[in-house]
Length: 148
Image (tube, rainbow, N blue to C red; front, side, top):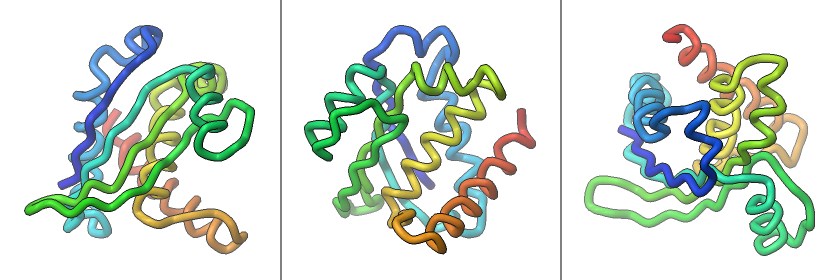
């Protein structure tokens, strides 16, 4: 099973997701039933933050002085039962802005899924990798948005 630890450092998140830990872990329970993820015993942390923090993190770790929607910091720490695969940070303002065309939950799911796939080795440096990652993201989203 995949498990996440959610940390929120920005109060606006609570306006849209009452309890982010419960929300995300329900999603991960569904994800863990998918054949690809069934045997994954992963843990990761998810920081729910704002544009200011995202800009700071992007500069500190990537030397890019600009806001971004999601950042992933892969690391593998093997425990007895689980592998800690890293950390993800997501910007509230970007999701809120994008959700005007869709909905907040869909945009939030897109971001943390994208970040999680980076933690487990997906990237989009080459075009064929981009499409492979996009197909995996869309497949996961279809599973989630059947249960709404």
